[in-house]
Length: 124
Image 1: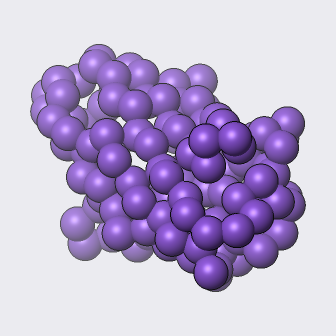
Image 2: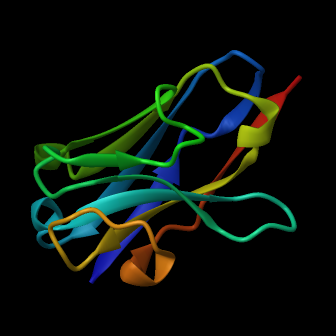
């Protein structure tokens, strides 16, 4: 079992930055691939970024590539999402997720564990 808790959301103006954190408890964090997803009001949950168990492989949605950076610190059981050059369309609840595999994935059903989410709001 893995428990995930997101933090770091907030309200910023367009062009600003936020850094999200995902703290994991439970066993074997370093063996799980992790991902970030987001869901805006009235929309489906969408893939943002994913990272392999070691951090050596990352994957990004086209909409965030070049602006967001996913990383992890395995000794601290924590994953991060650095979000720069934020746009109003990045406004959403951001969720972290863990999958029972070492490799990144893009589909929500491929992830077994989910956090409760943290709100990020970007104003124009």
